[in-house]
Amino acid sequence: MEKVTKDVQSIIDEQIRPQLKTHGGDLEFLGIQDNVVSIRLLGACSTCPSNQDTVSHVIEDAIQQEHPELSVQVEFSVSDELIEQALKILRKAKS
Image 1 (cartoon, rainbow, N blue to C red):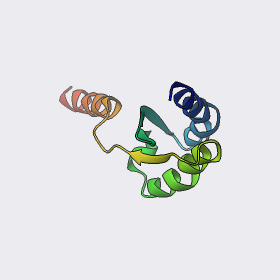
Image 2 (spheres, helix red, strand yellow; image 1 turned 180 degrees about the vertical axis):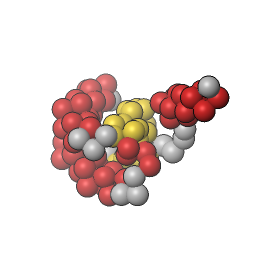
Image 3 (spheres, rainbow, N blue to C red; image 1 turned 120 degrees about the vertical axis):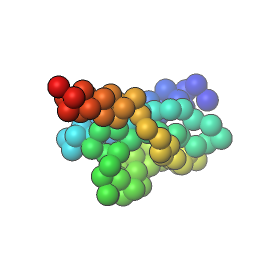
Image 4 (tube, rainbow, N blue to C red; image 1 turned 90 degrees about the vertical axis):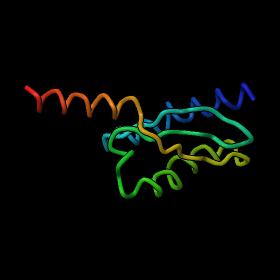
């Protein structure tokens, strides 16, 4: 499983992340368990109305080209990045 994890991390870093960054997005790789790759969408991708298409047609397709046995699951929770952005906004509003 360690090789698969390294392969997936490489696919994310070399193929997926550059595409997402062109639109102001990114993702966090959370791990693999029971052939399911868990990710969290970040930046513009986290709130984009088309993010399910991105997951299916960009992220999952790229991973499944090398590892067809894997699926992708998006964890929907508030990221540290989003909390930090909200705190900056609130701090500006106070001053």
